[in-house]
Length: 590
Image (cartoon, rainbow, N blue to C red):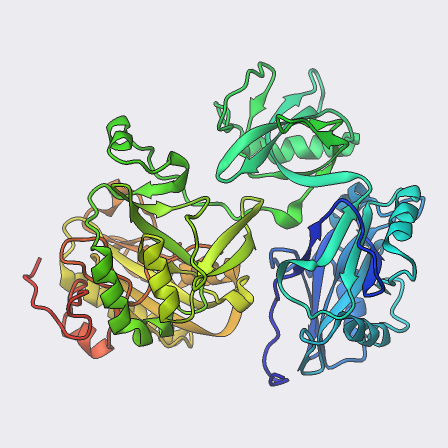
């Protein structure tokens, strides 16, 4: 139960596990797999909103669905379903859906609803699916065809699957009738596809020679294996003339001079692009080298468009790679000057501060700085063995594919992270129960060369006033490095994109007031004598060092919450250390 006055926010979808055959048994409900965009409707206070798989607000693109949802006789609800356009044969048509999304007033987009997560102030996720669907059926009476209840079929999984394939449908989803709704990929939902289809990043295109306006003739697609992109084949068919032109226009600003593939291939006709645009591709099978057979383009996956990532860290020099045994694919950024504490000291430290640290670190996905095999680095890709005390969260990565993030909720978890060679902990601005919604802002005051510390203090106090004017009560944290973080809990959660935009607008107020002292660019050449107001700590998966996390620096300083009175007195960023986590350590002024 929750307070009906609380603002409802996006909930990460439950997703099915892919299988070769439909399950049997009377405990399973079998539904058609709709070929469209997974969508979540949130209704509250007479307002309806529609969100994509990644939590983007697409209410403006689903006007017909949103308007119909407002007419439902409920005070509040969260409904899970799929946005679909039916083709001439009555079968969902993915490319037709793409076309209709360009017309905000389209009445052809239908929302097939198959689950009900909240209703009139009650959280229904712990109820069995059969009860949730029964309640959903009542809510959607007389709401069709725009809002259509997705019926489950009273037959065996095998029969339903064979019938779906005969009709030319994509497949079916089988769901256990007695299970609750749990975000992430779950074995209680099973999908079986008649026609194989998946999402792939576009890595290159071949242009149709002599075409005016310009259009593609075919696409080269990649597949992600960890943090590598490997060649997955060529999609030569499936394009309407309109789609071929639109894809060419979409890829134009992403053209690059070299292949983005981790293993180069010889494709003399290819125009290479940054792999930021995702395509839905249908195929008959996959070779043992990972190449798709009979690949056919179905459309672009705009609902899964990745958030632009920060520029990649500089590549390691050859001699740096020789100094350690960490696989290159595990290193997001090497910290060659880092000094990491011994594990026994880390264990004793976390035992001492766990109660204080968990207030800030618990139940948040964590980015790790690890020290192992002679290197200290920001970790990426496959993790080392994860102890049972450390929890795992499967997430859809913004660049496509699925990844694992770790999180903890007790001392044993913190000690388990030490066993994984973790030194620094950098938490998300969201909790594991609702990772797509930011619950706080972070503004990092990062002084450039030649900036005196009292100028950083002055900037922090000025930014506090800007946040207060925006009705945000902030608290400061010294970083154990060279700056200060302003942490601002959000009264109402918002998408990570919205949080980043808000943080930028607040930081911009200070830049506009004195551009000679402050800037929003990380360019080292421009930062000399100025303070970089780093708002990019906000955004899905972006992080800042967590309170009470040790730093891999001489003396082992720690990030530490402080009071505004301490800031006004000029407290230094490396005041607290692992050996003195609760009292100031005398430091020489820089």
